[in-house]
Amino acid sequence: MRDVSFAIAPGEMVGFLGANGAGKTTTLKMLCGLIHPSAGEVLVAGHRPQRRHPDFLRRITLVMGQKQQLIWDLPPMDSLRVNAAVYGIPDRVASRRIAELSDLLELGEELTRPVRKLSLGQRMKAELLAALLHEPEVLFLDEPTLGLDVNAQMRVRQFLADYNRRTGATVLLTSHYMADITALCPRVMLIHQGQLFHDGALDRLASRLAPERHVRLELEQPAPAEAFTGLGQLDRLENCEVNLRVDPAALTSVVAQILERFEVRDLEVNDPPIDQLIGELFRQGSL
Amino acid sequence: MRVFGLNWRIIRALLSSQYAHMLEYRAEIALWALSGVLPFIMLSLWSGSAARAELGLDGVALDRYFLSAFLVRQFSVVWVVYAFEEDALLGRLSPYLIQPLHPLWRYVAGHLGEQLTRLPFAALIAALFFVIQPQAFWVPSLGGFVLAWIATWMAFAIAFLLQSLIASLCFWSEKATALERLLFLPFLFFSGLLAPLTAFPPAVRAWVQWTPFPYLIDFPARVLSGDPVNLAAGFAAQLGWVLLLLPLVLLLWRAGVRRYSAMGA
Image 1: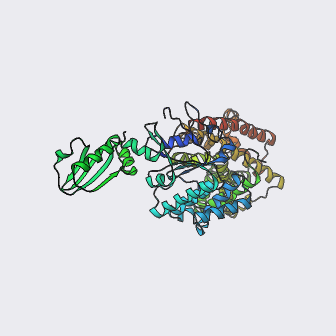
Image 2 (image 1 turned 90 degrees about the horizontal axis):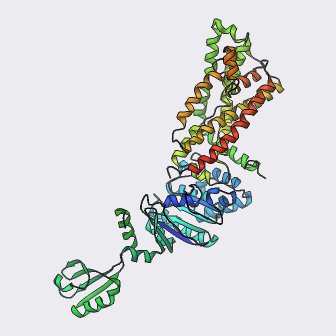
Image 3 (image 1 turned 180 degrees about the horizontal axis):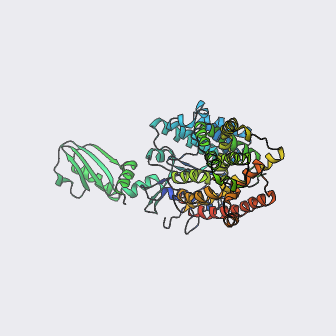
């Protein structure tokens, strides 16, 4: 990590994006105290995470989609009892929270079946329950929906949104599924080669990654390629179908010129989909 | 109130979950108990040997010593380095490290749960031994039993701390179990598992007394079998080793955690 600086306000839900090896998980581990930073300062909930003060540990949680804390051969309920004792949650409160969370997560008899017999989705939901039993104020979620089917992903997403609304918890989320980010995080941070490339709204990230607007035209009559000179980058020309990439600053004048030069049946101005941009970015591994 | 991060509720929750966990592996644990019959093999070797007289254990004393050695070994077996290495490599350590409980307590609870699971199998093997060697049967006095129990737990504590010291090296080396094998060899020879320490020449015996090994098997086995033994010196040595190893483990652990890169995550 190099010169990464950011602040997250209580209650925010922030998406953390980056290609494999960009430094997302390293940052999360640093924020929850698993990795000691070699330089710089990290403060989470008023604590230096690497000191692992018990008060700090009671206020955070880390969920890793690929890892588990539940005891594999026992029902999740056994691990929940241990967690309740470790976090000093009174039995009555723990039972109430387990009932509430299992209701939200749609977990029932799964809590009394050995973890090894649960499906991936059920296991992930039980992991979430175990990680949230102590009602942490700060959630670090590393690929919480990894490997889940579409329905299970949606349920986990819905649960996290509800949890954030209900408790006001701060959430930092990494995910390779853009749907997780777009559904949950008004703010995103994009990390690339250990540096923070973007910190802000998702649509602003889209503008940065793809500075041109996409204009799609359907003409009444076919036109030659030369007719589009000076209007922008011609991506596609097939009979009456035309795709152009246009500088946003010149968009109004370009549209006016198009309407003047051609008989237009249909005109559309679009931003490229964010998941396509990010996917492209991850594939290329460069900005 | 918590002492060393523990309170009664945490102890109860950890022990009951770990006992339930170990019960899932009861068949494997029974085999492990069976595989610990090395003292009986050594007993049969020594019994047929002319060198038996050199051991200073006459008649049934040798039988009782090796049965006691078997029982002490059953309840002081330590495997923390293997479990820890696997957890560190697979990234399972990370969730434990961010909970307000020292991760080593989970391994302690795992060992105690395993000992409880092992108890009926060890008792069965001991009963079989008495069927084969009825002349060796004895019932230790209550006081003797309690002292042997404490000595065995102290042996477990020393073995656990020794292995934890090596396990902490997992933070630096991904294959700390290889180092554990280096420790196993002196343990095998100097603990009293192959032969009572009286079998060694006085010079070796005098030197070995300054290592932790005789206090892992020989001393607790002698206490259990009722051999004359210097209790004060034995318990003092056990306590000394625990007090020496404990801060070392905690220091090495703390240094290791600073280097931890949360592998496998």
